[in-house]
Image (cartoon, rainbow, N blue to C red; front, side, top):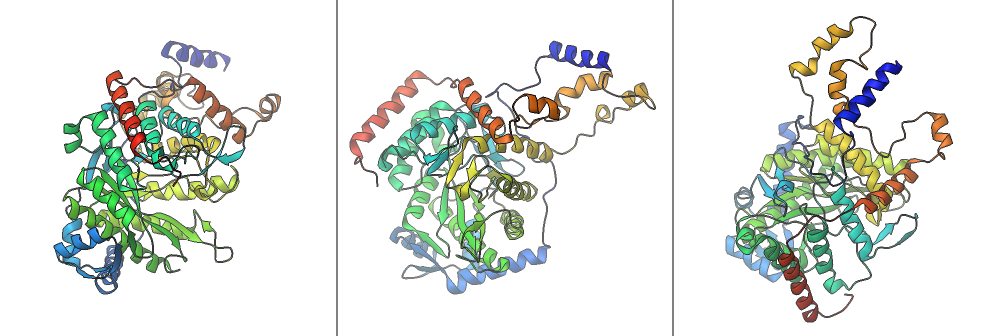
Length: 509
């Protein structure tokens, strides 16, 4: 046996280390496993029919005068803020949305396909607090934001840098979108998301992308996929609608996402909740197509149930899993990409609850056929906190799930009949040529896991997963180096930001 171990080590020495260098260009494979359809086609049609009844009979509120005028122009029944949409008009508009698109990165090798079998993974979004490297819970600052962008750049299992990864509360609200987008553009070369808190801020993001990518490129290509939430139940507000107008007109993608807390802002029953969700999402998708036919969109929702005892959101429940599978089936029915997923949980600490709720949220999302996975790393405390340690733990588990989604290879070499013949009955495969050729990539060993013996673990300080993940986050940040960016482009971005700061009131509102 000792000779075999030497052979393995010698093979590693000759072939190089099996661990991937942080930040190396890696490819997340397209999904190669089947999607899981939870309900039969007749049930999908029943959901669709009930959603159509909501939109045709009750209607949905568009609390924005420009949007109301747009709906009148295309023939919807508009009374006050209420818009009733005939199914023929609705489905004609929805049919104009593309089934897939390319989310371009400034490094073309980092660009990601959204839709079909493509899978995009973005980190947590919108947390006002962080759990920092010392374990303290505090308000997030710009340095935290920059750190999370660096981590998202460094880990191979995230192929989208994200958007408002955390809220940098030490810079003014009115201009922080400039700081956040500049961090995404310069500290990473992966695809990113734009700001959505006002149309002016969305327009600033488009202008900065024109500097980074070139105006002509931007006119024909999508370089931002940004989050717009419906105010459930049945309200699209002025801010979100105006942001959709800015991005759709510029051919930039919007995540059309009702924010579902089942039992609070939807009916308590899953069928009723999803019929409402579907109506809200379709209305938003249709509106984007009024602005620009063919504008890229993603169908999806933020999903949770509500504790009837405390009112707190709950994640990873059987009901949210059902909603996730239904989201996939309805997105495929309408021929648009699906937003889903996230390592979402309600735990206040990086503990067992955080782990099982995250797993029970993300695994169904993979199986349901998700295309854009938001909150894929770092989520804690119902999204109120972005955790450095949880970020690294989640990134590890994403790799496991991505390998699952890549399916199984069945080549002649994979069947290894020569190796089976070589080893024969009663032998072992540790030192055979086939093992030496494949062992570095055959299995994934999570960086955050301890795979030593009890005695070795005890001798090395009895460190748990939280401690290991914190150390890995700290070391990853220490190892970070930024991707190169053209100096003239960087100067133009800084000049634009400086000019906009003089034009924007320096307030925290």
